[in-house]
Image 1 (cartoon, helix red, strand yellow):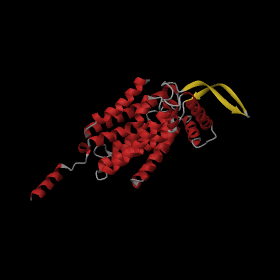
Image 2 (cartoon, rainbow, N blue to C red; image 1 turned 90 degrees about the horizontal axis):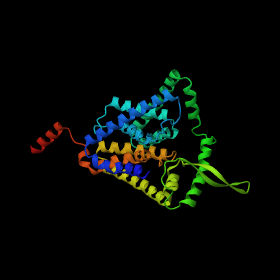
Image 3 (tube, one colour; image 1 turned 135 degrees about the vertical axis):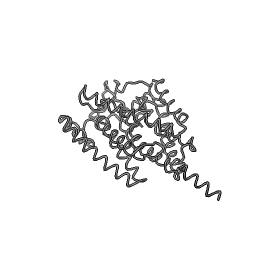
Image 4 (cartoon, helix red, strand yellow; image 1 turned 60 degrees about the horizontal axis):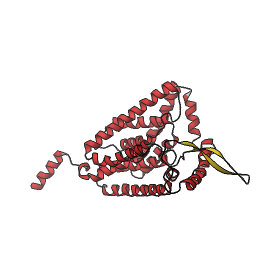
Length: 332
């Protein structure tokens, strides 16, 4: 587990060193699009061979796909994406989100669009409208291709905000169990890293004024803050909150420094919207047990770090014809 996590963080550390030019960022962007197509095809294959199942491929990659979505929303010449390619990417991302079945990911996209509304109202409204169109068209296609699939999708969507359903009750109950176990067993540095999401623990419960102790299944907390406390202890929780604070300040400073450079500014806004999605997704799902989920969660920030470290290479440059005209005017 230590090797897996060290690898994930090493990638985050080295990306700003490897991505130093616009061309590097474009190659990385194209690689992510290829990964998006691969994930989409893999879902189709999984459903065709195993039938419909929520979270059939877990969904830890949604934090990366959200970055592709918001980069497509704010397309510019740095990424060299056409309007057709941007539409293709956004549609594929949304369809993949629907197939994964993580309702929190879809809500996170809407939160990202709300964040976008403060920077570009027209674009946010347009994207929200397009999002609804994709959902309606996707539901229609599901009705035609697999009539038995649509009721399952509607049933899952209808329980999104139903706090009385078993999923919410179980996770709410686990908050107190997880917190108590974390503070009693590993309050400082957390429990040893392991890949199990569910384990059996001795749990003490109060029922009708009496206390009983029995073995119960303890589910990994579906909340980033509780995960930090449970797996990394109070030190990890403090470091995690510090990281979120530093990241927020960095994004704010990046936007302020690049306000006059529309290309970099658009990428900064896209990352901000993406992180709004990622944090909400991480506060609603298990993330720290997967090194890939850990990597994808912070991956958008590494792109901003790369641009900030090599600002001259990423700054907007005037077209050669205009540059020559300006030079001639200056000499005259």
